[in-house]
Image 1 (cartoon, rainbow, N blue to C red):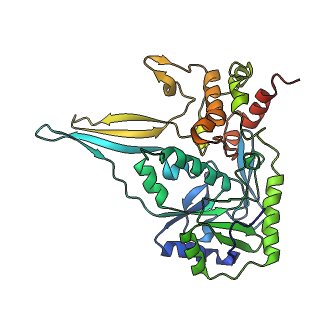
Image 2 (tube, rainbow, N blue to C red):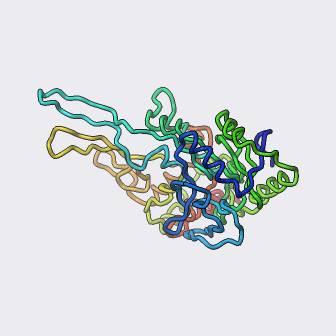
Image 3 (cartoon, rainbow, N blue to C red):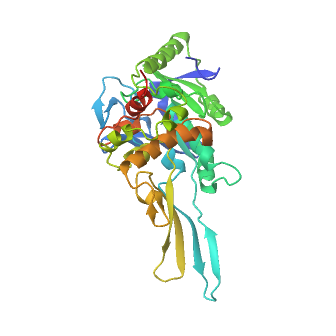
Amino acid sequence: MSIVTTEQGFLARAGLDRLIDALRARDYAVIGPRVRDGAIVYGSIGAAADLPTGVRDAQSPGRYALEPSPLARQFAWANGPQALKPLVFRPRERLWASWRTPTGELHFGAAAEAIEPTAVIGVRACDLAALELQDRHFLREPFPDPAYRARRDALFLVAVHCTHPADTCFCASTGDGPEAESGFDLALHEIDDGFIVAAGSDVGAAVLAGLDLPAADQARMDAARAGVAAAAAAQSRALPSQDLRATLLERLESPHWDAVAERCLSCGNCTAVCPTCFCHAEFDEPASDGIVSEHYRQWDSCFTAGHSYLHGIVIRAETRARYRQWLTHKLAHWHDQYGRSGCVGCGRCISWCPVGIDLTAEVVALAGEGKA
């Protein structure tokens, strides 16, 4: 493992507030991981004391729990149910409105949202990879999404290289972690007595220069490398290969889809927590006065009946077809659309599935069919 950039400084743990203050001085609203309702989720950060110190997560298929940790670290956990997705692709947002004037003319107007510059502390490598995939979808020419663009441009991302993966993580096998290699403004290696800070953008370099940190010594650099390497080695789950397109498309009629469907509830939890899923529905909400109508976009899931409703027919009426659609789209057809798999190995779909369906195990079962 290598430290990402050539310029690194050492920030003592007691000095973490200096970074938060530096970001606020640049007019960023600062958000980061916080403990709420038994999970680690993003929330407003006023000081380092707001971060989840001495907490770790315990994740397994169908289970997520927080436990006390003997480590006095702020980032000694894997991930919570959120990624960066809700910050750029809103769960529900108004896209435009139409209204009729007193003289009967019909007008249309785009929704205007005040975008606040936002610094996010604690971003994981898997979530940076997911954001890059969301960018490919929402910023694709010739019609990039203007609302997504505005929110994306307003982000300042502080990555933290992962040193404590959950049992459900498999980012090493997808090539997306545990070390963040790109897509951030600043990146932190958390070690026992503080952080090694590196810049990944010009604005990140300016923030780092303003902190005026001493150079990280070799012992701390070695500890940082060892922590990331251990995190990669600790991952016990994996996808069988980087490109599963041919493997899955050759097994569209496999009886294993029926076996999965017997367990799957079609609840859509996996798609809600997935940092790359972008399916959505659009609908109008007319006001009762008959003058104004608003048009909304809202997260949807390929596990719902409505998502495959077409001209009076639900194309994927059975859970078997919905799970197959989800898995083959994400792991096969994304190679055609975006040049890579749609899975970044965060493992959220495993932890937050109420019946504990494990994507990696299902792929292994499918890939093993027909082999001697």
